[in-house]
Image (cartoon, rainbow, N blue to C red; front, side, top):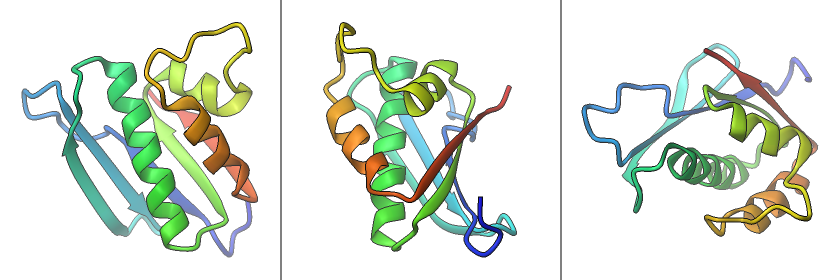
Length: 117
């Protein structure tokens, strides 16, 4: 990833404040300074739904900022697999996000993911 443009999208890395519907997304520069923080409520309390919602929000914001290369930080291995490998053709898109997310990812020069515990 280019040292000149390194931005991070952190998804649901904050305390959920005892509300399993919270979606927390932070867009950070290479020094870790928060450029934008978004906190919304998801329609479902399902972790995969919340994290996919957060990914969608983060990618949309990164595009709005004109970013071309991003690193996505998440604690969700399902999300990491989808970002790295895509969704298999025989898999069901239960949440309806995958096509939009896939199209957004394709518009960046480089998208990497790091699954953190």
